[in-house]
Amino acid sequence: MELLQDLRLGLERHYLWVYMGWRDIYRRYLRSFLGPFWLLINSLILVAVMGPLYSFLFKIPMANYLIYMITGMLTWQFISQTFTEMPNVYITNAGYITDVNLPFSVYHFQMLWRNLIIYGNSLIIIIPAVAILGHYKLHAIVLFPIGLLLVLVNAFFISFLIAAFGTRFRDITPITASVLQITFFVTPIFWKKDMVGKYMDLINLNPFYHMLEVIRAPFLGYVPEPISYVYLTIMALVGFLMNVWSYHYLKHRVAYWL
Image (cartoon, rainbow, N blue to C red; front, side):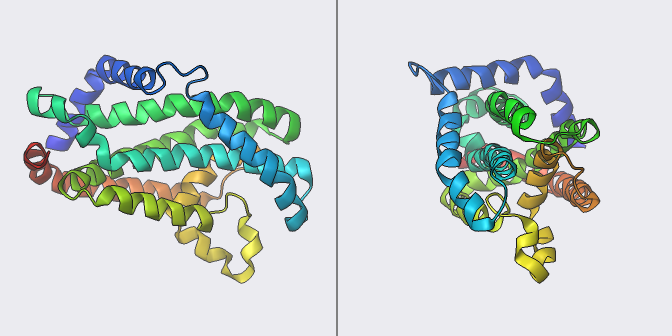
């Protein structure tokens, strides 16, 4: 199976995409004093300004709402940035793809690793905030790695498809950005799921809600709903099967589309 072979070779070359991910961050923030921490500062300013306002409007205790907003914003930043970069995975690595015979999975691991490093910086804010403002529980916190892994697996298989079509159709990049912008407002980041009343079940149709929930919920002291794990597991299986079916067709065309 070609996809599994590509995945195996990509994992064997972990030293390559780990280096490439670190190099990308170095180049992106070259001559920047704070580097990726600027993303944290932007999010914290937004939380500081909007947190008290929404806490008052939603009638939620300030401490509870601030930790909800901090974990939600920083986690959404990680998810949205990852999906924003998916259409350009092959485009930004065009030189390697046309000149060097590397497994395609290397480029996807590189993109995920780069964004995972940046999200790791967010934990510098999230962990102290949870310790000071939150009501964390050990049995919930231990589920964080499981949720993060599920999100990464789903993002890996989705990026294979989006990157290929993003190479062929350059409109995929702005379309993805527009979809994420809309999704930001319909996903419980600022507001809570139970605020929509009888329409609460409709939130379960939003895959980004489940990605957000399995990462954020452990920090808030509760176990994510089982439906979120089931939803993401089924998504990963569907994504894997779709890539098994399409990999051979897309692999031999990407270089011509670049």
